[in-house]
Length: 273
Image (cartoon, rainbow, N blue to C red; front, side, top):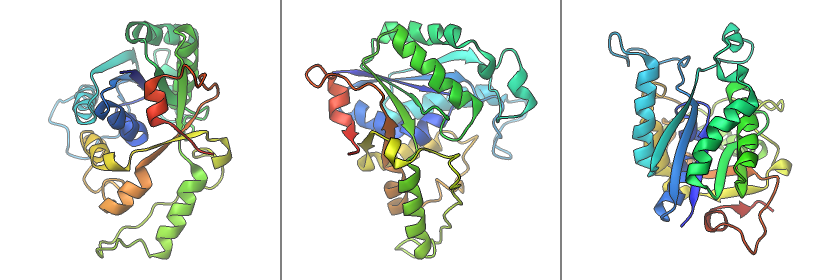
């Protein structure tokens, strides 16, 4: 069996972006490890969800372990950096935030875990961090360098297939955003300006994890401080959730030799073309 380490910026990022991939890997008997750069201190908690005096960072840390249990992950680690906030905010300039961390130093922190686990696959984010968040961009940079330092066979950059998503949203809009059971659901606006995800032409692989859609939903629900039951993703009717979130996309710049490709890679990742 193999090992996959999934590197993320904040708690709940693993749920939205890669929980299907990770749950599928765990169900097949592979070892799954979650690593978070920060504890998401600057997230916006759901109103009323925190107890009096409860710190958001502590709550979100605990939610990571609940999400890991839903996915089947065997280990959860934090690199110890502080949430940088959205791009352009004053918090980006804090000397202790992840955005300000020297890439080489942060990569060495991650490489300690990678050397311990000797993963076959490391997942990170694309070079825009999915949607331009500074911590997500830093995950790409740090993950890429850590993969080099630890000689990880495959570094897979998680991303959103912008063309596929827009096609799906347009199809749902034609149905007036209604599920087959009559449940109303309004698709969100997806920017078509190049700031969100990547065009299909740049994406190399996908992981089909529709059968793990309910596991992915439970992973997301574990992050209750960030996702209320009426969050637009959790409010998706089951068929739309499975269709929209059941396939996860990746960019892999350097493919392993087919003759020596890791088992977890060959089993999960399917070429897009």
